[in-house]
Length: 182
Length: 66
Image (cartoon, rainbow over all chains, first blue to last red; front, side, top):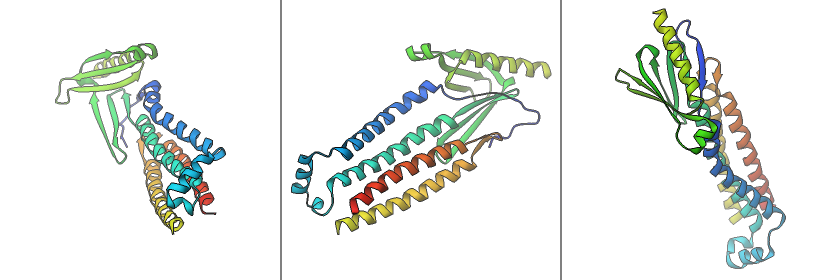
């Protein structure tokens, strides 16, 4: 868990844009939908020719029903697809950028059991640039926000976040406030 | 014999799935980014989905063996 400093206020928490998440989820969701559709189709209408083909050619199906065996395989495949979809969901929820009045924090899930977070103090920020690239990014207003610092840790990138310009303004305001206070 | 083999294989799969789900569920249940931001919601989503697909395959296994 990230420990906030004394009197540190969280201004905003940013995750990737929902559209980016949906684009990542789409292929696996399509596969799952097709598997589910095919599963329901097979459940109600298992072609008789398939039944004959399986029982005549594969000896395993002399003792068990090919229909339910295929359905069992499909449901196991669905379970595997669900695990992959879960990984995408987890990355969306847990990869985030937190802007506080003193610093910016990047919390990243590198694998299911490995996470790291890096911070950058606002007084070390030298430059903030926003990059909106591509058709979807322009329409849905998401992009990259790049923070450059003077220290060894040179770049800090908010990847595909919604409203990058607004986020930039908030960071600049926080930076000014920090300077005034100091 | 083949049915028995499938049952054994499936029992093993259930065991692995159960252990894996329990690890993931409790891991994300404990995980917190900030004091007021936790991953409990994610662990619940994972558990719901896993139980759903697990029950679905269990139904077909039962139908296969009867």
